[in-house]
Image 1 (tube, rainbow, N blue to C red):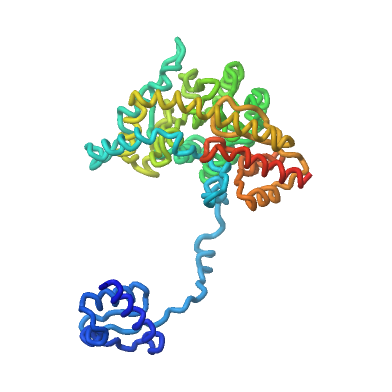
Image 2: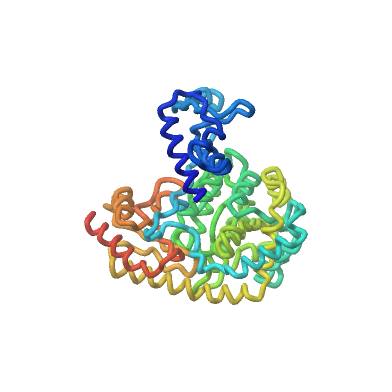
Length: 469
């Protein structure tokens, strides 16, 4: 009843305020109590509602008054043009893959797995335990919690062959996600204005990080089996570059995995040029028909700088990754990380360590492999049936994505718009090319929500392509 009375008082006073001039004084609480037959508490509640709506303002010891209406006016930030000057590097905006699709849409554009593919129970339990531990109120070391550093080192060490010295915990720097690690690594090892060789196509976030670091990207063509070693050698020779960024296992967006022979030849090219291979092992936990073997496990001379992320396989809320580097390169990256973020949340580090060392983690990964295979195959079959003119460049042995080439006559912007008009969201391949795209491509993510809608999505894609033919 009190609530009904307060709303009645609000309605009455709003009518009064509409007719009153700005600055007019409202009746006192005592007058309103008498007028409406309500309690002082009810009147005060009504006044709080009107105040929250910006219609009145109280002046302690004086009374309550009608607030002057503030009209919107154009704002002029032109002075900032002179203060900021021209940007040194035009950094691309955030990728459309980060957009949230509207309710009911079939989202094949995003890069993060469906929550049902994540170890939710392990994550919740680990976060609870971490919040109750000492890390909740303490600062972690700049390079990371020692036990987590040791785990990352051991992961590489398990793949190191006889005769190669495995990395140690001291070679590991824990990161707040791999994206910040890419930026730090490019700044520390390449430096602004210098060339960085980069697979093409490649991860759009690496292209963004390179722009942020101010380095000059030199694209190296990469196919279903990775880049050609001879082409890479030529790029090193022509540009004088001293670093090459690549994803040897389940590359984003193509899903390509280098064979062992090619990987060894590329590593030889990098060594011969006294250069770094910046290995991004983003999809280490997403093998389907093969297992990833990091190139970092084959090198102990410090040529390979290895970045491993847990964000997609554990949880987007636990942004934990690591970079493994040896020698002076490690010290430069650590110095950049210290300047950028000082240290990584101890709670997130402790939770991540709890999850990946829990017996249930291995069980989860084995089940994940089967789920990803079923989703991948369902989307491939759906596209083959309903969109046969879209060409799958290769069936990926792991990762989360399919890379399709559309007919050359396809207007990619029109195609994207028509798909979205029919509530199907796909990722344009353009942003995965460091330079001009080699053709009209799209990336489809098979790890998102509602895989049962894959046939419907493929049908829409096929119909849009058919109309454009």
